[in-house]
Length: 169
Image (cartoon, rainbow, N blue to C red; front, top):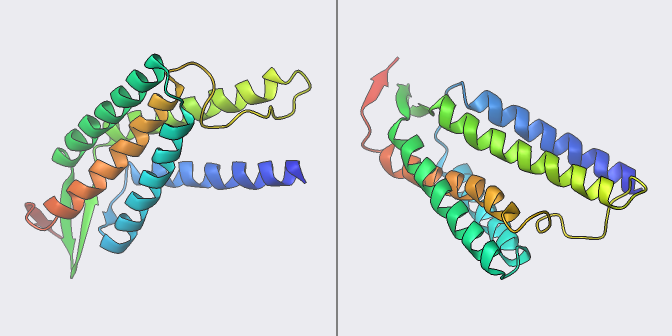
């Protein structure tokens, strides 16, 4: 049963990564409802990572730096976003470099954590430790970069999209 759960999670995460990479290079419609829901989900999961990260000095510094770096990348990414009107809908294309950096950080952190959890038990199984915590004190800060990036980026897209210079197709 545990292998089935892991397989489903790996499949879902892989699907979302492929969608995210594709989204870095293509036009996407601005959907305020979906973006708002994603922002809430990312904030909730980010809060879990904050709580699981512990309250060591290194962990707190890592979390704060992760949030600040993610927010700065979100602001830069929103400033470099291109908008296009297609009929009644507004579309956006983000900066591929910034989106790519955030995606690579996420994949690297996720891969390292999965590797760490499977090899630390000695038998190739999952260790009982929390997925969010673990590794070094800097681990949750790396994940918080992604959460902060998307929360800030989506918030700015929703705000800037209303008054942004728009190309007409």
